[in-house]
Length: 316
Image 1: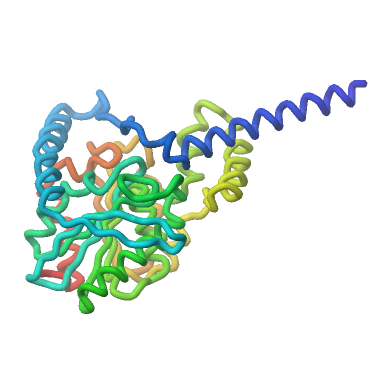
Image 2: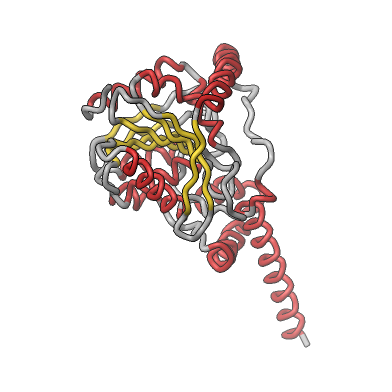
């Protein structure tokens, strides 16, 4: 009798873990769940001056985003699995330099256009895609960079059809940075540098860091089961690590991360930077939260970018 009771209790625990894991997968991967307002805000603990600067830059740069959304032309490609993927681009005839601006989780192409003006002034043509299951691109779910890296290869091919001499850099933010690093691991032709801003080592490691305070040791079986469900339902792999990507890439990289990031700990940036064995640079401003480096001390942000690129011989 006691044995049956123990089995029933274990069965109930297993069902609860599966339900919890499935809920985690749905919230993470399915477009209808994650396309809400970004919950990351400026923390009360941040330096007052930094808060004011970030807030002012966000307001000012929203006008630049609107401007480039208006003047850039739409483009579409077909993904390897048949999805229609949308983007915006603008050609700059002063050089063969291109930048692909890759947005993060729940965002879209417009969110990266705050960077467009500085790149365009430096002679870059710009492609800003909506990642699959984001913005106007088709898709019911995201795979956190795994399928998205193949989409970026298709974007690179699209650029090469337009400009056979194209020298391409990819600048990704958050999940877009993860996509960028997965792409860099495959060392595609014409990709001459990458910039990752607040990317994570793996989705699994990020979830552990976020949830362990609330779930305790239960976070480990829940995320383990979630990964199995994600693989079956969406071909995701939450354990796939960009540490391995950085060990495999031969492409120079710039690593950017705010030390006040509450979503993706800055330690992940240091680990990624350490794993990269080629030409690289590191920029970690202290007051910036997640995806806010581009809004804090903009002069220094772009100085870091263009000094890195010029050191590789990439200039207008």
